[in-house]
Length: 149
Length: 153
Length: 147
Image (cartoon, rainbow over all chains, first blue to last red; front, side, top):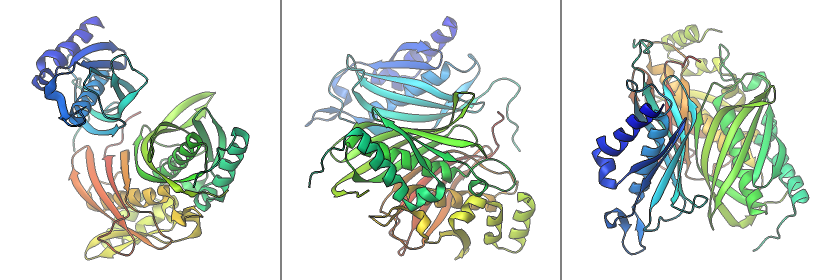
């Protein structure tokens, strides 16, 4: 299991340039759940006057945390995931502080994974900044691939 | 116009009455099961008329939509502590498995954030088998709280 | 009743309404279908039983959602060669205006039709088509998932 988690960590932290740009780091991995942390930096500000983090930072973080959570439930290396659909509800503006997103798999199917995600400022886990629901397409590497007509 | 907060037992009755007053909910046969601590649950006994297709499968996904819309909107009123009109702004439903054809479908909803005008609600529709819940669908929704309009029930 | 047979006959007769005999709930609710400028349009007749809120005389959100989902399914069935009952993955509705006590119509656009998944956008309106009362995004799994 640890080897699989290491693959997920490396993939999200090192292999995805965009995640590196935003500054995402996987902090928690467990069966069906994951957390990713983004320390504040000025480039992430969306609205200088408020000031608040850009909504895109939260949605990218939500997508990543959801993906990482789904990855804990597939076979690695081999299976791949892609985001099919995602909904984000923005609940309050994000302060210029560290943000964490946590994803929890709510259903793992053969071909699709549904994940619930919420994000919050470090130290304030109860105060949600945004919540998300995402659906990922699971592509299985094994022989039981769905046949295409 | 401000409305007095409704105390819990009365509130439960008021929510139940409101549910019965809704023609669509009566048509479907939705009943209030419980309402406390921001969590509200309703039930719907299934019947053939609610089936999606004559050839296969379970109840129409629209029945699940209606059930979730009902539980989520009542959850906003429960959180408000007043019978104030709410309007669904949007609802996203994830169907987690095919819906059952018979038995009872339940739905539970929680209003987890209530702003001045907008309420965010999560709902789940599920069946119960051998005392265990089995999720059928989940909803994420937002509602507009129309403070000017009280609902009479 | 076999969906494939009914669909085949409906296509031969170019009669989408006959498809509804396969959908008990859509029928019970009062949904019908017809052609409008060669596009399939579904209709939800007004009836007291689709009112959600008597005081506001507004249609229940779930009834509108049902119309949108049914329109998506009917349009998909009509457009595919291989008949399989589509399975909903998710369905997201935006309510733009409250539904008044009068007939509601809906039309779907199949944005993408892949091997496994179809993406459909559907809008519902009442009097004026350019003033929709609800819009939906629906993801449909075309090959039902094995349990």
